[in-house]
Image (cartoon, rainbow, N blue to C red; front, side, top):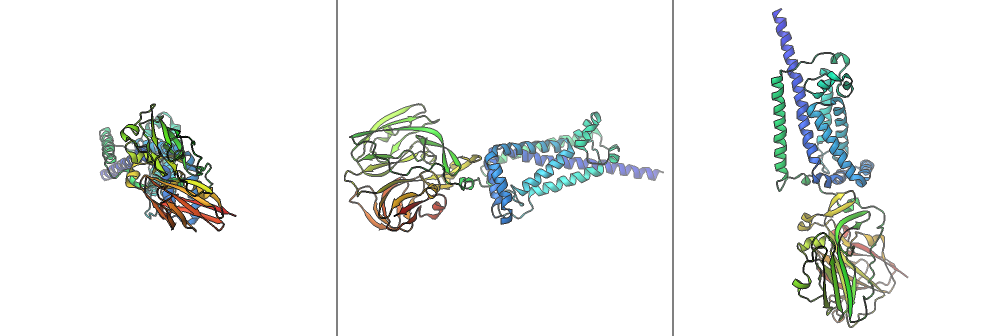
Length: 524
């Protein structure tokens, strides 16, 4: 009899500790989910959210493309909604696991949600990387949830959960919390003394505090941030296959005036502009466009400039065609203020103008640049068509959906997401420039940079004449490409005698692939 009592006591003790271990496992799993939930509230998570889907879709087999396309098309226009839905779901799962609230619902939702993450953001592998072949943590989470489900079906109620105490007052709560059969649920679950339970809860709380303290320290370190786990989505990843809706008119505008002086008014604003089909950018602009208005004057004219700052920070204006005291005329202008100055267009050519406020790299790359064309006093040969092409670079990070903003780290690293003609990638592929056979087509090409040269080239043709500085006596003839440095410009004539469509590109093919390509359609 004593031996039987000893065996029964041993069985009870074993069951007590197994139940406690099961509860501890659930709580530790809850710590993992608390960590996951914490990371979703960081700005890096929101900034890379759509990027996770694009990264996961990379290098997938063709038969999986419809699955990823569906989620990319669904999430991209509503990224903010999905970001918050993810945060809320992960937070609720973490709470459910840590405290043991609505355990059945938590386990089922957690397993399904993890399966969804594994098959989308992790691309059936993980973690958030293309080409990975490991199992993927989200699938491991699915298996852990299944393990919890099977364990609790066998053991029934657990005193190490809030559910246990809710059920005493509202038995109907079991439909959300319990997985075992009614027979198992009728058994009284063994539990450790309160002193040991409290010690266990204190231990879990301390582990939670230490986890978040170490995580916060790691997040503030210069390396190892979550942003490094996945590349941000690029604007060309989001671009529509539809033609650019509002292409920039590339035609050289008429002279501002024929008198001895002309007036130019430029207004700095914070403006959202298009940078690819269906993709916008929160930039800084002159007069609301990137590039800024094309200014066309004649050599010898006096240019009277009014510059007004309606932006949120200091800006300035710098004309490469002018010869003035920069400390006076190019000084910073505070928001709400303006400046006036005049200068004489003494040198002909295709020139850049831009904001010169520090850091100049940021202000130019954020959209504050334009072209000013100064016609020589001795005219160049008459052109049948004249176009202004300003090459620029976009360095971006995603705000949400199809809206981008600046990424200064990319600017410093010289890693543009787009290289563009007149502000928008591929716009003159969708909307070719036009000419007729035998026309002299004149390109006023300005490289606004801010970082890379432009090697201008017309595929299928020669550059008939290049004027490096707008002086008709300084010419180069029959070139294949012409290199233009950032902040410089050239006047390039092309004559094509065979009808067809002739692409013009930055012959750095990396830049052409990133958007610096257009087409010249030549007809009879």
